[in-house]
Image (tube, rainbow, N blue to C red; front, side, top):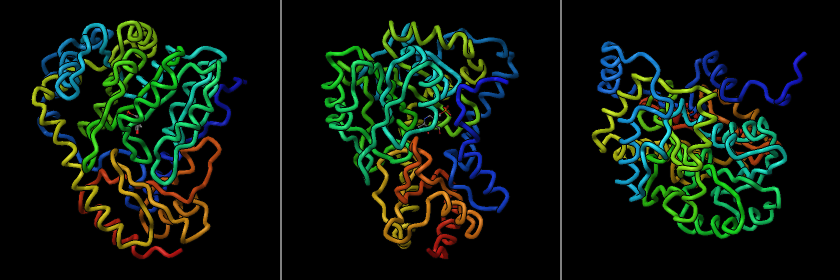
Length: 381
Ligand SMILES: Cc1ncc(COP(=O)(O)O)c(C=O)c1O
């Protein structure tokens, strides 16, 4: 028998809820993927590169054209220069970027601070590399960071902190003050940062995504992980990237080299061409703002409490004032009896703390969102 390295890890809730949604023909607002297709032009570009024979291994660190586009996007949007050849690496999804970055830093016995609720891939990556996750709860109800708690969690063994902005599931977007606070806590220590920025182009109202690398001190220690899946509605392509200073990128690439070696060649060429026009990512905010506003307008007529999400394509709502039902049970009941699937937020906590919160994904067609809102009106506690 194999001695499991992750004995407590089973099928994720995302699979369970999506399966349940299919079984009960429910509207699936659980898993975080767009309910609409990508741009026809991007599909055509991919087909074109496949037809033209771009079908063999790409360079290990990525196709130069795409790395240049990523670097120029970062320079245009945030006025920060990354060397496309030394500091930009294309990988097979942000999940790979997160794993490779965590693996590059974490050694046996190291402690890694994870802010909870947290995306589910961070802790297993830490554990598989012999590290120990140290969980720090985010403030409720807004999912901001409790800096005193982070300070208290730092020990002599702390080697890394994992950041996620805009935040999944909470939708909190880090501010300049957060960046300063983080740097203040780690500047005199050799502590690195993995920043999960997959929702960088999905930010609402007056909020702005502020990547950690815009802070000079943090730039030297940060692996910034991005996802084309989220930005261009192609989550099934599993393609992303990592931005990090040269020395960090060198170590990152050593891991990437033996995880996947390289990433889909025709997809890289297609994305490089597609990104020629910056409006394709700049206007994503507006595109999703409409969906968020429509969804929240409907939610105002429902008995839930919520703070409008600042970023990502998720909204968390509370029913703590309505019922004591477990969030997992309510999510299952909603799917089976009312035809709408969502994710119970307790699954984003290592100890399954139940704050009576549910996460809904609104990256869906308007019609589907209206339908879900109609169905939710029938919900009884
Ligand atoms: C916070 C966060 N990080 C990473 C990912 C994974 O991104 P990718 O599909 O590019 O691996 C997701 C996908 O849901 C996510 O929500």
